Length: 121
Image 1 (cartoon, rainbow, N blue to C red):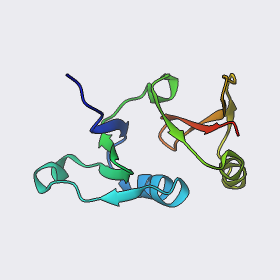
Image 2: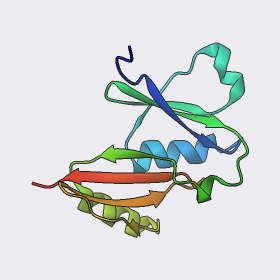
Image 3: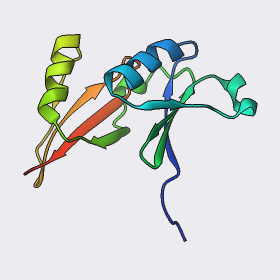
């Protein structure tokens, strides 16, 4: 029986951890956590979001920007993120709206798709 999700992993190119820290910690507001020593040699960073972890593993993947794979984050202020991304020059991709949510997508600096969703009031 599956009882929950322990973590989600997306990938970044080798050697881009500092750029990932800026985007995921400073821009998105996630908190970096310590990786186990035995895994540090693999590169990447781990992040905490509530009870869920987001792992940024390293691999060379030239097709990342073409993928529909993504993480969808629930947010409390979608307009604040839209303004922040506009100010930073991050392209916003309008998404088909679904009942109960406002949403849009962006791509992180490595091409990974990120969906931001806010429940309608």
